[in-house]
Every structure is written in structure tokens, then in C-alpha cells.
Length: 379
Image (cartoon, rainbow, N blue to C red; front, side, top):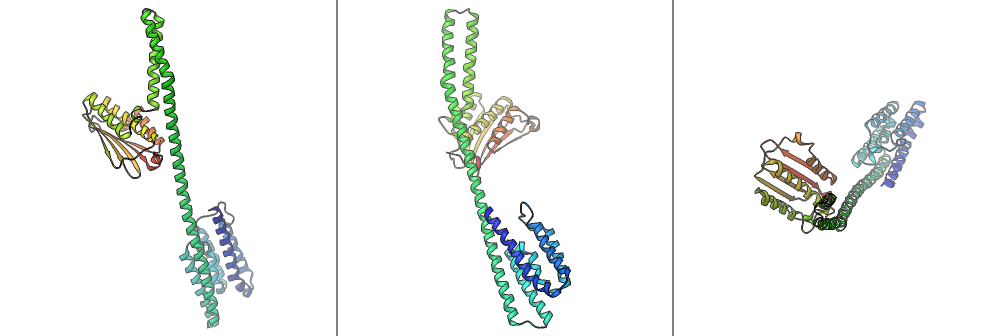
């Protein structure tokens, strides 16, 4: 792309210089004045200021350039009408990209030159018509060629950008998969080493306490060991949701709503819409965590009679809704809550969003959305 852009700019500069020389050499020779030479040189400098000396080069033709170049051309035309065809020089930057503008400019300049010859001599010869037609056809062909190459270059650039975006999405998915795998490895290592070790210590201390029931230090050591067992198990659960070890996200959500119904009597159920497809492990974990937090909030604070978990598989995103018909709350007041902040951070980390809709007495709906980029690492 960079090579083509440099080549296109070189062709544009060559086109500008060649057309300026061809269209102004004759009138300058006939005029024999200093002012036309100054204006032609000024037109060349004006072009260089906008398209040669600028870093980075301009992608579009700026209006100030066209206005300034048009004023210089009008000055030349006022001195001698032979400078009429120099107008195409001002439009050269357009000719490289906009084929219609370029061809209209070429045809107009060729017609203007014939009109000038007729106005100057009272007649137009067939040879002049042939020369003007040949120049117009060849120039219009060149304009069309460069315009088509420019369009192809823009299309290639778009495809390359799409490829880069896909590669970045794949790399992000691979990083997420690596993070999930590492979390699972840590979970297994902690469970197999620290948790089992603390459990063994607890068993030994319990046996020792049976022999020495009134030993205060032994009782304290047993309490500390039990606390560390509980903490290590909490860390293991945080690193790897047990519900996803043996089943997928839909089954884990159904299990979550089922336990809520069994333990509290709340009418809780899970709805799955769309075509179920595999998701990246990290995506499943984060969505499950959001569902768990939302259900826990409904259980503790909402006094809800019904809770509905809806998992929607769409073409370009996946949406998780957790709705309850409980007391509701004022979202602005609870926006800084720890639980909501954690849920929002989970979604934003994967490029998604979290929306909370609630009002006092109107229940609460938590909506978590993840785009296709976050789902592309599904396996």
C-alpha cells in the first residue's frame, strides 16, 4: 500500500509538471511578458506547497488549494486566453482519484482549446481537431487507469484492514484462552497441593485435639488450618467455576436458577434463545460470574418472587439477561456498588457492555452483551 501511494504521488507530480509545461510553453513564448512566467511559476509553487512539501501527504484535495490555483489561472487567462487549457493543471489531483472529474476536465479543456483556436483564427482545421481529440482520449484513458488502480488499492487496503482486525481478534482470543488455561492450571495446583495439605493438617490437628482437648494452642492452630482450607477452596472456585467443568454455559445457568428455586422457593428459570454454539472458556466464565452476582443480588436484596435468566445467541453477539420482579432500586445511587462495578469490569475486559435497568418497585434487569470479537475464540 505504501509503495502504491508513493508511486501514485510520483505519477501525479509528473502529470502536473508535464501538463503545465505543455499547456503554458506556447502562450509564454508568444506573450513575451514577465507576469505570465511569474504566475505559471506561482502555480507550480502553489501545487508543491500542498502536495509535495507536506508530511504526511494529503489524502484529499483541499478547497484552499483549488481556490488559490483557480485565482492564479484566472490571472493567466485574463492576460492571454491561450492559457485556457492550463486550468486542467489545477485539477490534476482530482484526476488521479475521481475519474468523472478528470474526464470532464479533459474534455472541457480540449473543447476550450478548440474554441480558443476558432476565436483567434476564425476557423478550426481538421488537424487541430484530431490533435485535440488525441490528447483528450489519451489523457482521459490515463485518468481512467489511475482511477481504477486507486480504487483497487483502496479495496486492497480495506481487505488488509479486515485481515488485521481478524488477526487481532484471533490473537485476543488466544490470549483469553491462555489466561483461562493458566487459571485452570493454578486452580488444579492449588487444589492438589495447598488445599489437600491444609485438609491433612486439619485431620492431624483434630486427631491431636481428641487426645488433648483442652490445649489452647492446638485449638487455635486447628481454627487457622480450617480457615486456610476454606480460603484455598474459595480461591479455587474463583479461578475455575466448577459448574463449567462438566457442562456448558446453558447447563450452568439452568443449574443456577434451579438451585435458587430449591433453596428459596423463588420461581426461577432459564431461557435459551438462538442457536447454541461453543464459546471461549473465558467468555463462559465471565458470563457465569455475572449471572451468579446478579442472582445473588436478587436473592439478598430484591425480595423477588420470580427470576428469569435469558441467554440469547445472536449472529454477532451474545446477550445475558437476568430479570427479577423485586423491589428494584435507583440505578444512579447503586452505580458505584462493588458488585455492579465488578460485573461491569468483567464485561469491559472482554470488550462488552453491562446495562442495569431498574426503578423502585419495578424490578431489576441486568443485561450483559459481548460482541463477536470476544466470541471469535470459541472452541
